[in-house]
Length: 573
Ligand code: G6Q
Image (cartoon, rainbow, N blue to C red; front, side, top):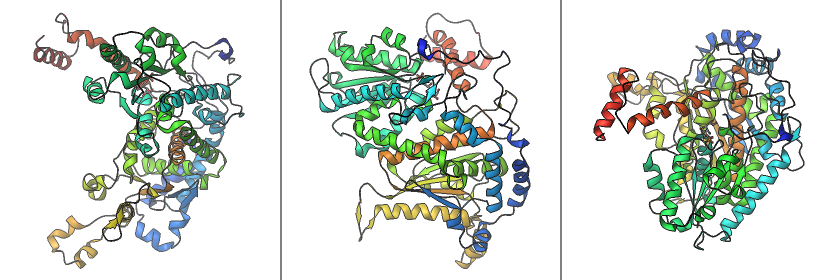
């Protein structure tokens, strides 16, 4: 994502200018299909077509434990996948041959692994403890990170305590984050996930869509005197965010009248100080981050300001500690026990060798109801690429479609297709052993036990199905047997965690961040650019003036011209 923020002299790159043909890919970072492991996996995939989960479990009574790993209060059971120990061995060999560990070191060392934008990729520095040294182009960035965290903490505390007052002297009761994509999905997901840990007398809301109805609905019952807007935009040029921010400014001033009110009711999170002050926000109230933090990897940067106001600095610190726990685990644990490696490798197997086109993320936790949307961006924007790092086409599949909703709701809707449809959908079930609120009674049933029983039953049913013989044995008439048969052999992972907390959420998010990294490395794509998103940022600009004002000359294809004309007609223009 391009940014207008200028590099300070100290940040100037010390690297040699790039060659006109683009950066070369290190020799050790080989295309996956040139590895021995890929060839073995291709052969094994033919055999895997005949894999039967009942037989796999029957042959190996310890399979459940053998194909599980545990770390940081998280238990990952990947035994209900169409793999055996030989397949897993070849997948570990694939990660080694593709240089995953070496590239992880390069990322953590601040090398410019985002080659198309010539940037380091250092979201891990956002959670590095004080005193760690992480250099980007010769500059240790950890003190900068802690300087911003310190300012965020001071500000968050003042809003929480009521020391920060609105223009008319009232306390802030609502924090509205205005941002989109990476500047929205993480904060809203974290706020929803951790609501139980928030200061409840301040509510956070999130406006992202350019559709005015979003702004209208999120603010219609708010009092401008008690509302603080956090305008979150890395570039501070994104049309949706800038338009919503201008609308918020007008909404505030309509009641407060005085332009000085902006300073008490608006703060900014951005890398672009020039645009922030042009908007009228005092840069003293701006919280910065850096071009080495990608939008979808930024929820633990200043983009998490609303999260910090909600949780308090200590809670936000716990979230960061969770991310850090997983960073360390990812760097230190051997692949066989390494949760990001395992999730990633199973994903590559399902995608490239078993031909699965989607993955459903199914949290059995209502608090995580925005998690699938968050992972959708994390995975699809990172690895939804069709060319390799050197610009040549990928000869393999990359990111699957990620989707999902919390269980058990999904069970009453789309699980039908997962159980009996024509396309296999690997599932990631995510749950917590302990609820935050123990609700129910032994007489009526404990909610959490019923919830988890459902999850375990789904994994079991997907893996083992129900044979025609079993259906018949229930007395089903013959004509109904095919309808009531479940084929089974449908892959799933179960991630069972101890208990939801800010720290556990940090671990879960970092687990998926590193999963994406491992897959992106194997697929040999740049997981850290988003040219497809950049296109969207310019396309609409051409059409906006054609929707109002004088009738435009037809300048597009016949379909687009007709749609513009219809829109104008129905708007009376
Ligand atoms: C994230 C993407 C994208 C981005 C938004 C918002 O990785 O690049 O989702 O976060 O387009 O961009 P700004 O923060 O610059 O407004």
